[in-house]
Length: 467
Ligand code: GLN
Image (cartoon, protein in one colour):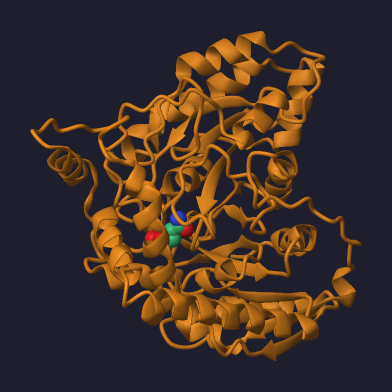
């Protein structure tokens, strides 16, 4: 039998159920990897060794559960009852949620074990995990480089086999981009497919929870467990089950706007190779155009700060979190926020407050909302011609820690993930080998609720061994 840490999620659950090994043995295999590698990686903010062991002891062979005895790491903006949840920020460093996020309750109902909480950019703002108040996470493929972000801890944990799978959140690219940087699979589900109840909000009109996994099959398993309408999330939609399509009958578009400026030519080459491979499998490849792609980043950086300025208003030092006592209530709030937030949340709160202020809201927020519709229409038109799109996930491979000093150059990491997110579409990042020993990912985008098609094509890509 291969090592426990290399098994698929289904194999782990079956092994535990059948008594080939116990949930405790599974847990210990991953805790051992954590003990060996975590000092170098800093993938976790909290390792739940004790709690996980208590859970594992209760799991008996023969029990039901699609994830029986499977340890799962969770990004630290996902609420876990009784287990500290910081969102990568100092402002809630002592926060212990009194309830579980719906996704956590769903994992537990299938027998999963909560292994720990992973590192992330503060409130999920960033693309490198350097914006965490708990130190940077290192890329397991090269410790001098970032793992991507904001779900960098989750991606690094899976890539280094500290966890068999992890949940992340993706607002502008925070699952897909770190998946690409760390050489793992990442799914950002359709907006509304997975409940966000109990997930600390960044941009409510964009946020989604999804899996990071070793394989497409594992990502599918987790997605099936966490998806579904939830009475606690008003944006939830029940998935319509689609007819499976054969690869031979698929029409795949490569948007020309995604192969130009800013893209590492070696990655462009990889995308073309993947296209040729899919063509050999019988798919029809054609070039398509998404003419408003260019506006994606500008639109995102009006909409996200605007929603951030509202969503983060609750962290005021009054009810919970960092509190700096002062004589007046105004001073208390302002000093608490001044002390508790790092510079990226502050930057966005200021930008968003401006973009929404009277006299400017029409010029900024409203305009951005209109251009967002144009971007969504680009995709709708493309999906009249093709079934799915193939693009690079990120413009570069993992960059060096400390390399991107100005915020704009960091924002550019998400040029290929943001537009589809603005349109509410699902996206899957699949590893396709390496360039100079650093992983590369391609992004598959489909219409809303086309996750099964993305998984099928992702599995075909995965079956070929890319060098
Ligand atoms: N990097 C983008 C940002 O900083 C996306 C983050 C995310 O998807 N959570 O907002």
